[in-house]
Length: 403
Ligand SMILES: NC(=O)c1ccc[n+]([C@@H]2O[C@H](COP(=O)([O-])OP(=O)(O)OC[C@H]3O[C@@H](n4cnc5c(N)ncnc54)[C@H](OP(=O)(O)O)[C@@H]3O)[C@@H](O)[C@H]2O)c1
Image 1 (cartoon, helix red, strand yellow):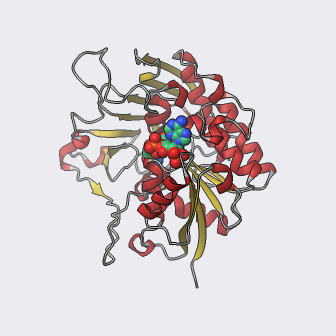
Image 2 (cartoon, rainbow, N blue to C red; image 1 turned 120 degrees about the vertical axis):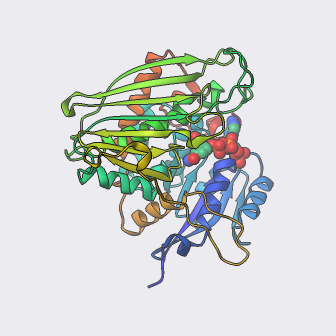
Image 3 (cartoon, rainbow, N blue to C red; image 1 turned 30 degrees about the vertical axis):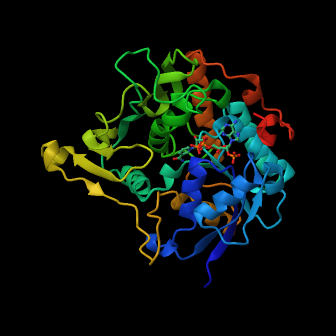
């Protein structure tokens, strides 16, 4: 049977749009996929039509792919099935609303889903009212390793899970002074408050991904009846812009007697120096043992299960490696990043008429945003009105490229 083919429109042409689009066009057979196929049929840049054309060429889209110099033109293209939103998080709410409301298009939106939980609720409400597919692009959830670890936990491999500790941090110091600038310039989306900068929304979301996919997603209750966490958070601010630079969240699910600690920082790294693999980034701790996952938390490729009953020392337990498949076609230049698994999920949902992904339901994306809302509030982080409003404005500068 011919694969179900999805035609993607790429909204924005930055770093992750490049990675994602190249993954879309990678040979699906390298990862064992034969039921769905992806095409990049259009891209839009708020900078210029030329920039979009250059992007399409760079990622290897077909010669007939359309280049647009505005997001509005892209969402209006009748040849596009689904829009991938790859702007900074500050722009997600307005850009996704543009695609849903004005373009009547399905959407896959990069993490963090929005800047506030109210915005996330509005997006979900709008997609449901218009019967459109919507998904937060947390690629980590669709990694074979994540699927395997969730299944191990569910099968009771480490007994009852009581605690998860997860860290996604990058040492971005320029020098040894604790108040010095980090390697990002002040206008970088990593630290610029106008672009919803800060460690939590950009990096901490992956620590929360691990806490949520184990401690929330796997709760036995049906979706909609799961227990949301109580949240206690501490944050240190980056002197130069006021964004959070180091944040630690404690999540408590008292009804399930479980706790999570999620850490993120731009001052210290998960690994020592540039060695990501110096220690596990994630510990999933149960009554009968522990699952350790090697970082980075967003791109997990090795794990091991240490059972209490094995009576082995930690060093005797081997790591299970789950590498990303390499496209070995002659002339292929792209080795794959691991974003194709989430794209395959979106394609299968469209094929099957599903309006959301069961692996990351929209109700869960909302609870995650509510958790981040609480943490940001406790940390005293206040983003500007332009990027926190939940009122859609087709002509917002966030849609027209004037912000
Ligand atoms: N899944 C992952 O692993 C992953 C990794 C990195 C980033 N992300 C997420 O993807 C999103 C984009 O991140 P990125 O690293 O691709 O960012 P980036 O390289 O800075 O690209 C963002 C793009 O958004 C558009 N844009 C529109 N208005 C803008 C403005 N005022 N300032 C900056 N850019 C603006 C620009 O494209 P045009 O000029 O073409 O409109 C720009 O190239 C973020 O939400 C981030 O959290 C995800």
